[in-house]
Amino acid sequence: MLQRKVTVVGVPLDLGAGRRGVDMGPSAFRLADIHQHVRELGHEVDDAGDVHVEIAETHDPGDPRLKYLSEIRGTCEGLRETVGAVLDHGRMPLVLGGDHSIAMGTIAGVARHHARRGQRVGLIWFDAHADSNTADSSPSGNIHGMPLAVSLGVGEPSLVQLAGFAPMVEGARAVAIGLRDLDLAEREVVRRSGLHAYTMRDIDERGMRTVVHEAIELASAGTAGIHVSFDMDAMDPDEAPGVGTPSPGGLSYREAHLAMEMLADCGKVVSAEFVEVNPILDHQNRTARLGVTLVASLLGKRIL
View 1 (cartoon, one colour):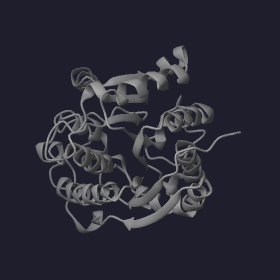
View 2 (view 1 turned 120 degrees about the vertical axis):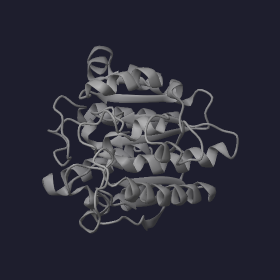
View 3 (view 1 turned 45 degrees about the horizontal axis):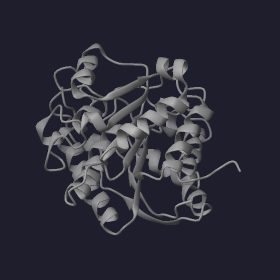
View 4 (view 1 turned 90 degrees about the vertical axis):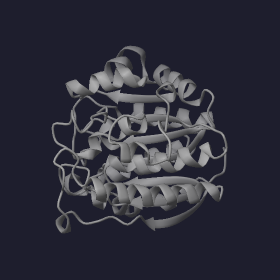
């Protein structure tokens, strides 16, 4: 197993979501002993603390089509710099959210780091939702429903350009797994972006092993490595109750672990983030504890 130097980065951001609580996600992961679980695998771990986040009650949401745009962009810029510095030091960033809008900052940092070396990155995105709305299509104006589109070069220009170029990830090298709840307008964005989308029907019909095998091939083709972005609502709510936007019919415990185990085996993951844990809606920190076990599988934990 590849021994890694892992740096944990917390991003207690909930400005992109429609309800409060995911700001406590990083603390929930830490309380679930994420550091110890990673160390037990033989990896070196440090913790960079939390990226600065503004408090919702002290700011006006602004444009109702892009709520808290300035504040979210500021957090993503700070996260971009932190992730870039972690990679510059030869370490693997493990980012803990927070709502999924933080992915714009993580991916900006990863993509910019590799672009400076003439390299591209691939993306595998686990989610119940496509997160591919824009200001014009979003029914809520919540930016956590937009980060995948932004990463693929579609949406608000100041977010699309977070890495200094666009797209941050090419659609041909981006894969979404577990989709089952899309807005009508998102479907066209997904089609035009070139994103490879695997719905729950694909998983039902073809199996997780086939889907993840294809995803790894697509995301690693011509890239320096793969960024894994895991929204805990990709899981079935029976497994992960503590999420803000649960959707029935999601990934099972074993399907998710198989995906993480296969990604560990491929040896091509350069960065990862786990997001959307909402302890207010959880039971005894169950969702964060599940997230920690998924992180462990991604970092090489095996049954035998």
